[in-house]
Length: 123
Image (cartoon, rainbow, N blue to C red; front, side, top):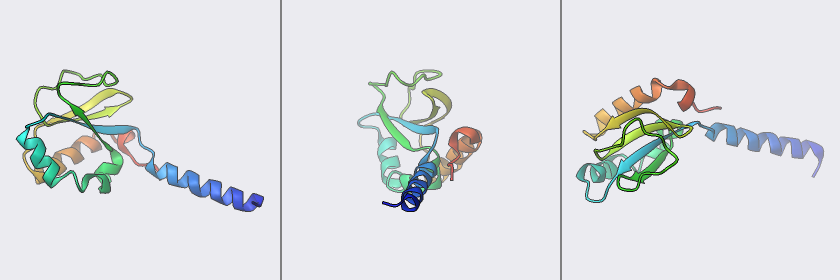
């Protein structure tokens, strides 16, 4: 491979990785039998990874009864679903419950916009 082709390929790949770089994730705290979790799964989950919001804060799912040790919550989640914006293992913001798709997208947008340094997608 010539040096020019190698340089071009390296630049191209680094650009791909830069586009997907992000600092925050949206942690969904859920539990079996949760009606509102099921509703969110039906109305939001299929589209979420393909949205701007999903790029800004990729989704991570955790069980209410088995919370991970790598996240420091400001308080233990009680309700499901609870959506927690996390950066470097620390809670930045929280949205408790699910009241429908329009409320979810609006409130999530506000939450992400309140933390632009953590949720911007590098391009």
